Image 1 (cartoon, rainbow, N blue to C red):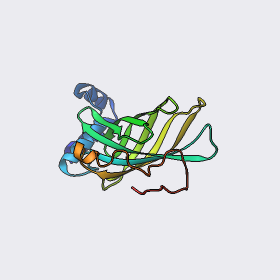
Image 2 (image 1 turned 60 degrees about the horizontal axis):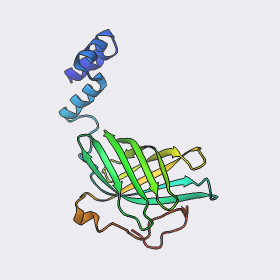
Image 3 (image 1 turned 120 degrees about the vertical axis):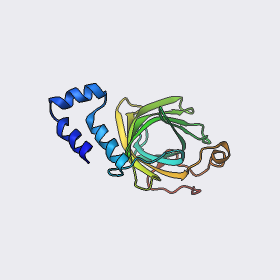
Image 4 (image 1 turned 180 degrees about the vertical axis):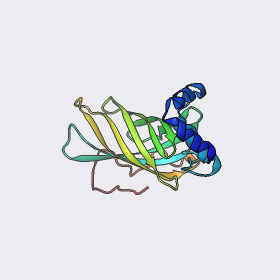
Length: 191
């Protein structure tokens, strides 16, 4: 507690600026790290590894109304961040992600390739991890086909914590995932 109080006390003054430069890190991060080591403050989840079902809603620039798409995504967390890739889908679309986790906030970029229309979309996202570590919710943002910026809700649910080939092959080409499905209609086959 003494270390945290000292860092918070000097953090706002000129001494704090010199200390940040000497240490090479922002003082607030040092405070949170010290609190985490002592058992206080918000704890970081150990990993986001696993197979996730992710669904997002968007307004089409071609069709009227809101539409929903879903992917099964494998996340693998390493020292350089979190890499995500979608599992194979029947229509061939692919989604890749580069994410970072800080406490319970996931921030990153996504890229989607839709081979039927030969289009590539990309953008950013910010998601909040729930306390049990099995759900994410937040927003995506990116360019639409009509050169406008779109955004919408993005919800994730962890289906499995493992990422081995044996586990992920069970989820490949799963039927029933939403693909340009009008919001409010149900999938033919639940996941």
